[in-house]
Length: 275
Image (tube, rainbow, N blue to C red; front, side, top):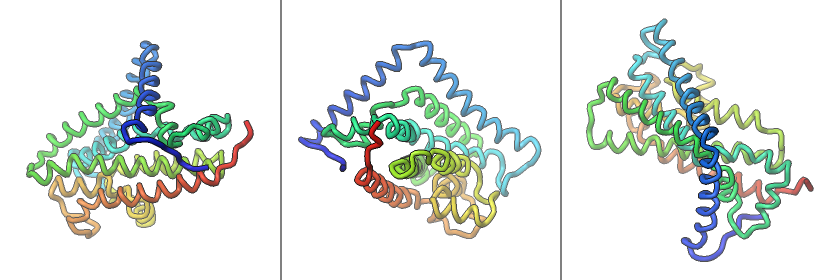
């Protein structure tokens, strides 16, 4: 089975847009549940921020960086992750779609498989996490007293977008393992949520093997750490040049290509469970 589409670009987008609007209307119709979910998401992100603040109650620096500098890395990582989680995070439910036969229903429609799955369960409540993360980023940049230039203004926009593309690719590639192994959820969560936690701290606090795998092998070091060094005009203690801070779009492009390859291979080799 393969991805399918037809008609002009505008026509092809219409069914997905209608699916998305139906999801938003459905979730917003239960207002109490909707707002409780929003508050819960704020509390979740607040807990992560509290962890960083508590750490600096017992140490003046972390991995060689001060609290405002670490907060910039934390915020860049959280914005990138939460944008990806909003856009494609629900793909991690593919295990349920395979097990219940929902995926079979999606495959017989003349529409893109991934686009349908993303529109089927769009998490509107996750918008709160994005807004909260952006607020933390603004505050962190002020506290870090960044000396702004036009190049830095571009970087502070491009880096989270590239980071979101990287995280989105990880979400899709890790979830696609369910085409071969339905119970792969724990491994997928280790990579996606582990990558989130990794990217929100300076990579200098991790051991060399961990850095090689997560920072450079999976690319999480380019989400927040290296862009933050450019914004803060700090040299890399690990010795890489300043240009590394601008590499996140290239890393994201490679990740998107690999994720698309894994996803298409998974869809083509999918065999119905008969549910």
